[in-house]
Amino acid sequence: MNKEKLEEISMGLISNSGMAKSSAMMAIQSAKENDFSKADEFIKEAQESLAKAGQIHMEVIVQEAQGQQVPFSPLYMHSEDQMITAQLAVEMAVEIIYLHKNK
Picture: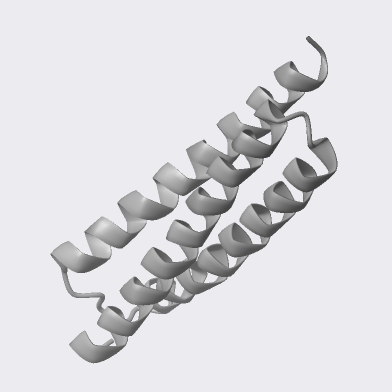
């Protein structure tokens, strides 16, 4: 894998992860306002963005499993960190919304 491709993958991960985190936060805000249908829509958007990030991430995993060398990149490392953080944000948002619905 060349450096340019890894940068493209990294930016895709960062972009989709950022969208997922933003949607998760908007879902929490909607739940605080007792607008649970909107909160559910934002969670769906967040999960779709995470799915896109996961697909992009899987490209790297598959290539490495096929024996292609993936060079070390601080940008790629950062993008994976953003993806993991987004996954946690969405999971926490789902739980926070549940708590607001059942208070």
